[in-house]
Image (cartoon, rainbow, N blue to C red; front, side):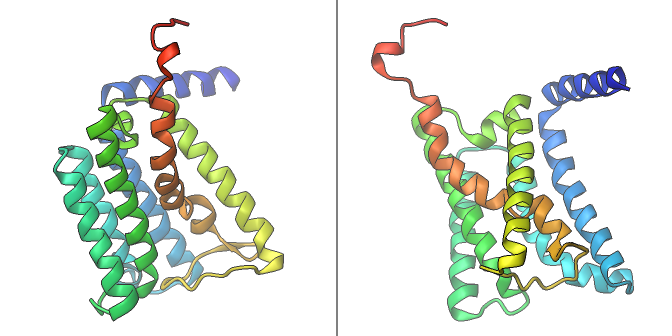
Length: 214
């Protein structure tokens, strides 16, 4: 069993290095599919209603997929500013009305991520998204594991205390009062928005260490 898992992980690493953009995009749509399916099981209803409840997620998945497939420096600030404007408009002016207001926070976080990565690319020639799209599976695995573990831990600790709560526009399966989709995916926008400011410190080395080789 351990050998099978080891071979599977190694195979994923190799394929991710070969086709990082494909893996990145498939991961986005796989996440949406999981959210779609679990929402249906949380409250069985027609698939059309499930799609109507969760369709707003595609406002983030489709553009991020486009950026991943056609990563250009100019695309990041364009989409970053669009998401920032969307967050402002939905949070403070209530428009556009067809987008649920709960997504304003995600729009802000994605805007911070894109604009921060744009600055990182201009200054350091590297960024979170550029490294993920180059096949850096160590970074990808670290982001996935740390985000899922941290998100689940924080949400489960918050559940009995109720320090904060969520009002998502679609039903979700819950475990001990914590929405499954939130524990699995809810912290990704926050982690990306925070790491975009910390990642440059990992890229930039002090002058006295630049010539040192380890």
